[in-house]
Length: 219
Image 1 (tube, rainbow, N blue to C red):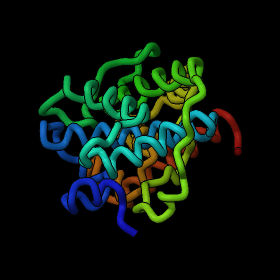
Image 2: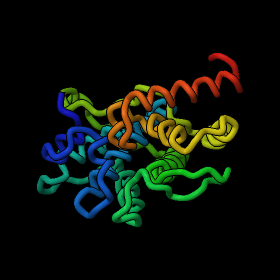
Image 3: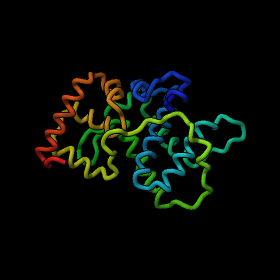
Image 4: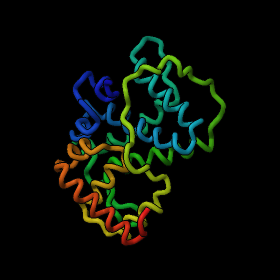
């Protein structure tokens, strides 16, 4: 099945890894923001399906129909607009570039900083959620396949995540690989994102796992 990023780029990008491998530009920033918003909403669905489904399906519907005359954009697209506005401040840079340090003093990428910004916004929406007209899901069962987080669940409590990462004392490459998987990427996307081979990724994943077991014991 065709992926959403492929459909909405008119076939330019085979997957999200190809999209995010490029520097942020006026030509791709809209699509980048939309794809990040979809991932943030997929993560929220694990904790609050009622709110997330409304925004997620609304955003999917917007992406398919927003070019149509008299179409009214849903509240779901607000999430994408927040991501797009955030990324616009980093034109010419890649989302894998370092954004800055978090409260724990750990470097985070532009992409991860964007996810966290959206997560804070979504938590606010959850608190202020009001009853709205539900969207008909039945018309969207045959939509192109969207990417799925097949690895570790993205953490909503970033304080615990940051504490864990600090304890593991990961190398810069190991931290970058871990963040890719936390952002829902599959191995091929991590390869494209970081420009490294599958062997290197598997070796570093094994190293991360050994460090985790040494600190916290087997899962």
